[in-house]
Image (cartoon, rainbow, N blue to C red; front, side, top):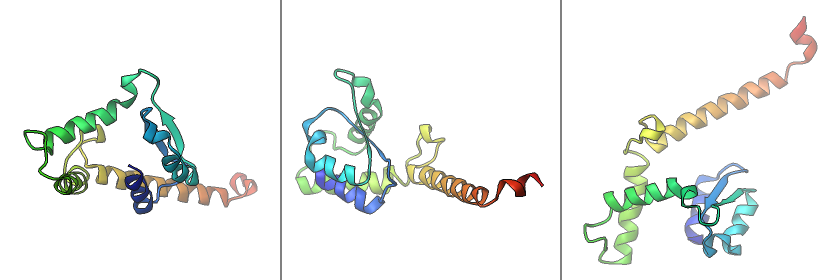
Length: 139
């Protein structure tokens, strides 16, 4: 889990203030997980005690993963095969080809690209707006 988190942070280079939501498992509150999240000033969020609905999105993802990726008997022949198949499912299919109704029938990669472009446009507009003085706006 820690290795996956560190790899994700290195590959994706998220902005400060990323929201990291997890259940109350001890692995998520360990220093090995919290340290890299503090470095990027992540907002930490944990589900409420006994509140299964807090993780509904994650639970839905894992249900989809098990249904669409796992073999019928739910067992892979080796750990290496499981890693390869799950990686391929997420990185090749789920993020780049599978359309998601909650993302306006786009792939996560398409949705993120649109969001990223809108964010850049907003930042550019804010920079341009802040470069004008008040007197220039009223004359």
